[in-house]
Every structure is written in C-alpha cells, then in structure tokens.
Image 1 (cartoon, rainbow, N blue to C red):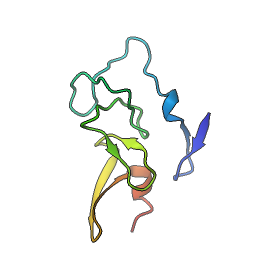
Image 2 (image 1 turned 45 degrees about the vertical axis):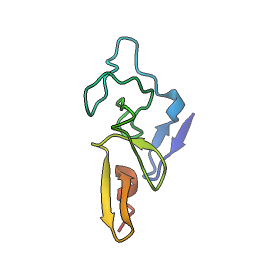
Image 3 (image 1 turned 30 degrees about the vertical axis):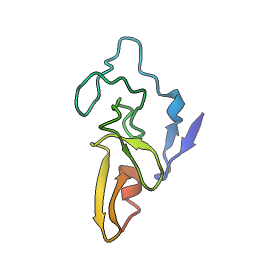
Length: 88
C-alpha cells in the first residue's frame, strides 16, 4: 500500500521496507551493524535506534541526512526534509 506524503509524492508504508537479501544491515549514519528494523522514510536507508530521528511534524523515522533540526523559539524540533519545506 502506498501513502501520499506532505510533498505530494507516493511513499511506501514503513512495514513494507525490507532490505533485499544480501544487502548491508549496517546503519547508514554510524556504519555500525544495525540491529534495528527501522528505515528512513525519505531515502529507505537503514538507521539504528541511536541515529534515527523522529520528525516532530509527521512522526516518521528519518536519518541525519534527510532531516534538519530547527532551533526556533519553541526549542529544538526535528523536521524531515518533506516537512521542513512547510515550516517558516
């Protein structure tokens, strides 16, 4: 099943994100063996629990390359690349 993201693009459901057999199981950020089953919602790379970031707007898991931290008046908030476009 596909979902429509904030940017209007079709996205796969997180449960459908299974790396191909023989693909690297290493975290894309810290390159340690990722025991996690989490994949970045933006780029589909595996991320371990310590490197994953949860978007405070849409609650999707992202890696450090596909997210930005907004240091606004409200405090720190993590935004995925899709949601950061809509924040002023």
